[in-house]
Length: 305
Image (cartoon, rainbow, N blue to C red; front, side, top):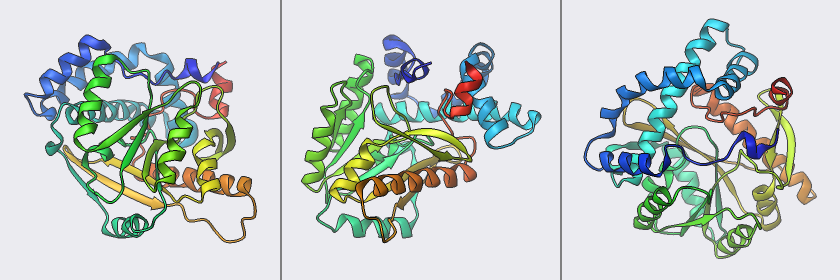
């Protein structure tokens, strides 16, 4: 099964449903919609075999949970994901003030050091937590920010996202099939700007590398890491993790390279391992905020076929 079939990258709900949700969230606080998830999610788990199977592999084979613990973990994971999606829609609807996002002072201090340098910065996110909230709630005016986004969203969703990010002076760079977005990324980094990009998924045709992740082999895209290695750009692995109700905790970990790396390929592989290790660390703290609902590990793909 190809990656394109495993993951389309498009936000669900349809154009009408998304517009209706944006309308509601402009007029009510998002937590009023949370209880609806407890009625919707059981039906989703019942009829979405692919998503449930991928979660089963994650909890049973990766985290080594018991059958009982895994069963309740599926439900908790989907409820948390539903809340994260609603929070994202609330922010895009123009209501970011509902959320309290805190980032550790040590992380902020280290990031400020990078901001003070002339080089650009790559903020490497993943489908863990709610990375998109970063662009709405991260205030700094030293370097322009460009977010690399999936370009196949519905028209209504895309328009709402452009409005919301535009208010924060965040530029959006959609991923293109011809890979022309890579030139836009390099141009922004040449200017010493910030690139925010999700780095844990790939689409067919991109360069990938298989590495050990959570003790099992998984494939990661190498493109952004190759750019970072060639241009000597610092990468900060960034997570915005949901905690209670409207509170999020942010983590920013600079992927610091060791001495003695002699080639670009060595640097790329080291960055990949450091990035994967940062995801492992965050999942140990937040095991129910893993939101890759397709066979992520090579062994999971084998079981599905």
